[in-house]
Length: 271
Image (cartoon, one colour):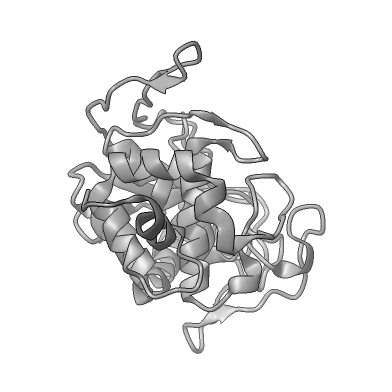
């Protein structure tokens, strides 16, 4: 196990006993996995959005532990069990949503949680996806899974992990509450994770790769300029729940920044 900052840990030990098939360039040992995830964090920390999310987790005081998710193309936060050994994992509680009142219960005590994150090569079913061992750069995929990510426009290893880190952050702070949302967003937690990840992508200059909902198949965001106005209610809730992070994210220099637009349009005094 290795530490990433104060409250993020990476534990690849289960890969040492994993007996399934592993793609040619996929990491296969605990040390390889931990080194690989550490390199992904280097890319996340290179962007301010990534640093803000990581630092906010470190300030939360509860551990987020990342485990391998072998031979899977998806990442999962707050899972019930570790997929190789089947041992139970610590799970943080979410706040109860009252559908009658359409409100969430007050914030609760945060707790430790986990992220199941695929080894290198899993995310697009392609052994080349991941980190180039020679340069440390994100490796280009040779193909995508058309039903999920046509044209390789999304789901790179760094933004996939960031999406899960946003979920973990909300859990360790005791703020997670799945308010149902329409227009393909499923709920408020997925909305927040996609929005922050879109800001990260925009900071990287990938403004044509912004995700337009939380559907299984990638759908591009068609009206990024009006996002803050189209989604005023969930943005209001996010800013009220996490005002410091909202202000810090609003100050990030990126083309897609709905928090900056929201604050300019709707916030008359500092919150």
